Length: 382
Image (cartoon, rainbow, N blue to C red):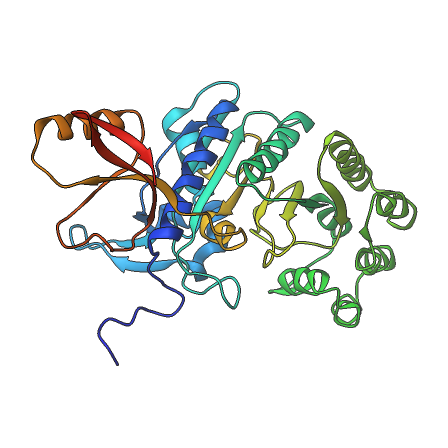
């Protein structure tokens, strides 16, 4: 095997795609800043007990682990940035009131999330801390949609659920071993047969409610049907009302509901959403409410947010055209150098053609050239 072969699901990013990724990264961070979100940069690795504490424990199998040569302690390479941002909010900033934070950086996964997914996503996300009501959930949803808009994603659709529904249905039921994870998997797969088997000893209202969830997906009529067939528990009613209110505020996106959808990170405590687009392989964005994510760091307060993989987002979009540039000759003349410096200061890309390389093809489309006319260097269309 060649020494230059990369590990499975790890790949180099070449110029055109890299430019697209970088332009998107800047646009997404600018959009988050427009909403008042402050950029933070958590470290790529931390002590394992910090990285996998609390909500991060669900990421254990997805986390690469290594030994710190300085301290001898175990370190982990982050698989998700949300627990780190929660630590920053709770332990370092510790501000009163609402805090809005965003981030963008690579994460590493021991296994890909999907058959053709990378194990090195470039994760962008936004988190809002300190507000427990509808307004925070709506803000992160609107920001997520605006991020997709600036990325030129057409016809996005939002699919919503609420973690409180399943939690309320299972309240008071003794769950042993990994039974809860199996129930979640059966619900996500809409596997009624498996769900009947797993819940055979459950109280009838709980069992019937869980089995009903498998069929509760579609447009807003689902919420009406859910109110009729699910047990009349206060938490269930509150979750259904919350979903209805959120959907009523969304404009420019198709909205659907899948009340059995429990995919994504296990730390969600309320509304969960996924955003899809035509031609995309799976959800482009996942987010929702994850109250108490910072409790293990000494601050138990409301939190909501979302994240996306910029690499996956780029793969779902049309390739961008080559960047327009100006071709210039390679000379040492001071007036030419001054003209090039002036153009670059205006934001133009000026590519100096080295001797003997006039026909080279690169990342830039030179649609203009710098020529001398009457002793002056001028830009002319090619």
